[in-house]
Length: 224
Image 1 (cartoon, helix red, strand yellow):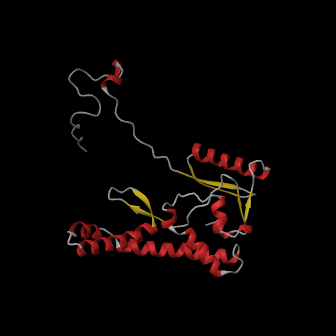
Image 2 (cartoon, one colour):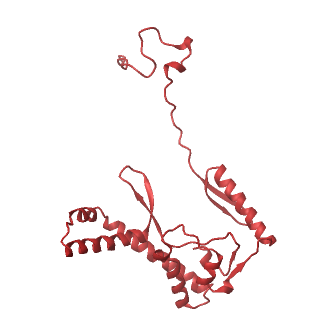
Image 3 (spheres, one colour):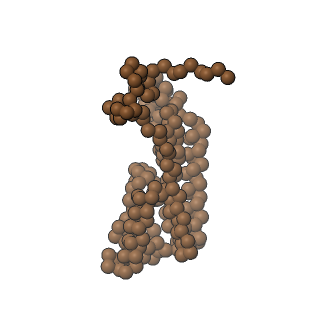
């Protein structure tokens, strides 16, 4: 999305763009959160509708599909539709201003290509420099060779950022010519499990007949 809002895109043989379909955080029944492509939520409604229609047409039972359909949250469907519309709106606006130089129809077509999940199938699909040149105007992409000094500077910056992210629990890293800032993951302190009898030194072992620490009934409350 940031690249599509620029005037030109610098790419090397390892550079990659990717689809701009929206990702939505969905809470699981156990409280954990998973990331789901918005278009997958939209497509699941159409898939379920078509599956039930085909089953009814062919005289097959539909109860299991109806039960699955009832589990779909309408508000999540609405959220997915709006998220996709917002992504398209953002991309078309900035493509028209910069890369497409006022050509709104070209901006709309480029946006459609980058949001085509049926073509790319995965949000993590790589769009390399050769494919990017097929989607975007060729004069907006600057391709650097492996030996280009500028490419080597970009590659060194990438490796340094990867090291920072992987060694310092960094999630996001922002930088410009004046300063840099990173956002890290919180470390949750976990209480260690109680020691097993084999780990308790003899000098600290409980008297014979008493349960090890952490076991046995709790002592009665003291009187105020």
